Image (cartoon, rainbow, N blue to C red; front, top):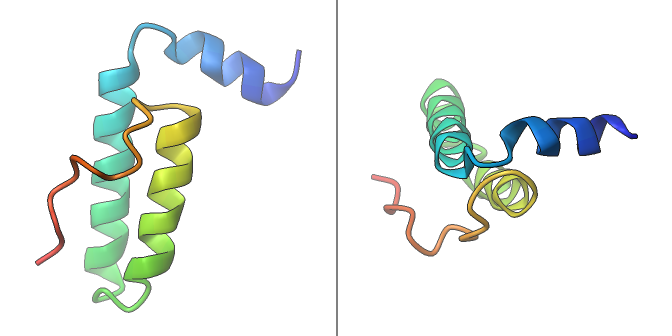
Length: 65
């Protein structure tokens, strides 16, 4: 069993909490970098959401200010 499979197993049933963590982590990163890497952070958030979160790919995510 790979590490990714172990993480997915632990998060099973807690997708909404994982999504909140992904969103909060990305927002914090954007804040600390002054939005300089916003596109890259958003791409990372989308990929993490597909793997661990709800898989909404940012469609329901509020736009950055």
